[in-house]
Length: 137
Ligand SMILES: [Zn+2]
Image 1 (cartoon, helix red, strand yellow):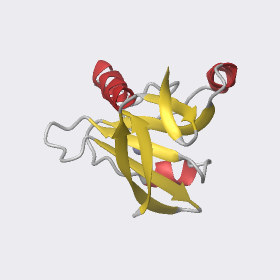
Image 2 (cartoon, protein in one colour):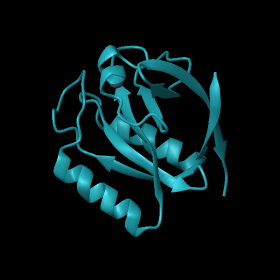
Image 3 (spheres, helix red, strand yellow):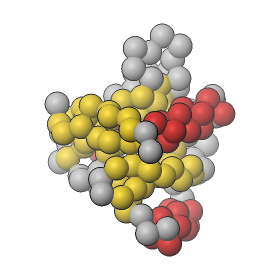
């Protein structure tokens, strides 16, 4: 397993809430923070409006990056949901992963998922799960 990833507990909750608000579409968004700890969530729109793939439109991505920088934060990760499959990176997720130093969170909306949120690093096509450490203030 790769190094653990640190994230504020309320951000994990907000990620789950976003996924539940969109039960028929893969939700997606960006994560940012300071000193390697994820402290902020930037929900986005799945421009493909699909149940099996996601994409953030370039224009929205640009605005989100601008908001992250305005707040003095660093872009540290992204998240999306899987509606009916296990929350591990799909072949498409692996192929499209463009941030080798970041963390990819995947939320499962399956009722019996043992771990509703899992985190991975995806580097040159190889996937490593990261342990999630949730922190308080
Ligand atoms: Zn996926």
